[in-house]
Amino acid sequence: MSSMEYQFIRDPITGYRVRMSQEHSLVGRWLNEELAIADVNSFVVKMKNISSSQDEIRIEGKEVRLILSKDEALFEAHTLYQNDVDLSRYEDDFLELDEDGLVAGCGFEDFQALMLDWQAFTQGRR
Image 1 (cartoon, rainbow, N blue to C red):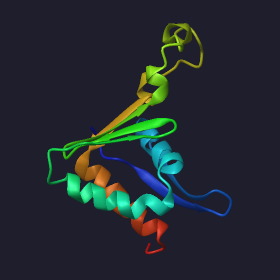
Image 2: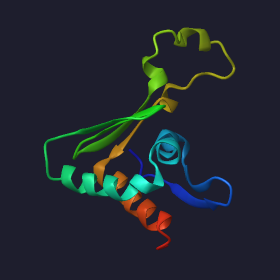
Image 3: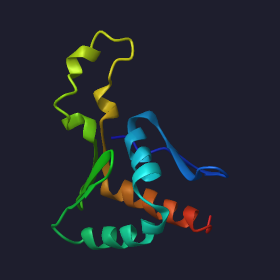
Image 4: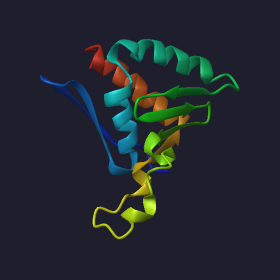
């Protein structure tokens, strides 16, 4: 897995945003849409606890599920599990539904580094 590339943006209308490379766009979507800025600190604390435990955290977001263990962070779009979405009907479509867009993963350390950067950025320490 390649390391994550990201860019933080402070937008006057939408607030804090992160832009991620294509392969990690789901991670960016989770940060932008699922994790409230007010919850960043408590999430970082939870991450610290998980790094030394066998547990995993599962967070069901509105659109994206996060499964976090001490080894990796796995992001899955809920549409992956909607049986009424017949993926085969997208196959011939020009807008090919890229399965990569529905699942993204990264190592725990990479994700923790991203979260610590995000925490510093959203609290104006960067």
